Length: 254
Image 1 (cartoon, rainbow, N blue to C red):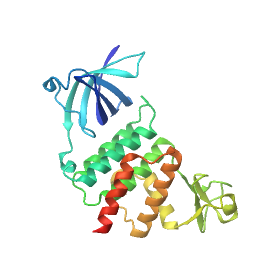
Image 2: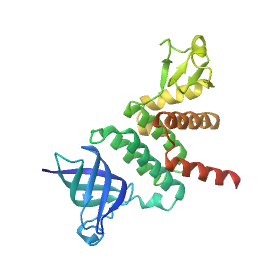
Image 3: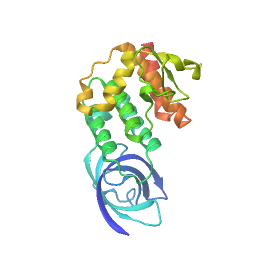
Image 4: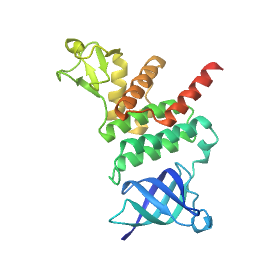
């Protein structure tokens, strides 16, 4: 075993036996990581953190070579993001971020860009009055960073650049040019502005993307396409997405 120290965002935690916790982290230096915190429920003062979901910590752990579960000896809180925990919608959005990273990223595969994206989004959620834009940026950037992004820069069938109208094929995972519409009869028309928005977000950093204007029509289409694409390729709808859908329904009724 080797002793390691890294910055970590808590993705989820679960009770282990009577006194301990198993915590899934996304770390700056090791990617997705599982850690055992022995005795934290019996003696919480042993740790300078309560390792709440999506809190930002610095952890010290013993990295095992023959197990995916490592022993965490210290967890020091850097930021608990209290500013967003008072808003149910933002809490659910932060939970969705953890769920999506957990679903897309492999175990112990370092990706500093994903870690930075998570941290940027959580920091911005604390005070931002447009959390839906943050979620849109997060989904598009996560798909791109994880290598699962839909193909939007050319026709997914023939490879030609799409210059005019196009359709989006869920099963083929990208755009179809007019000559290839027949490749997927279930494909749907897509606004050129939606395509341009996706490409802009993929190519630019988080701060630049926050200044991007997205009109309501494009925002709605992006939500439909991104959620359908994720559900199709993950072969399930994330539980936190279901909760977000319910919250949207409640807001819509008011």
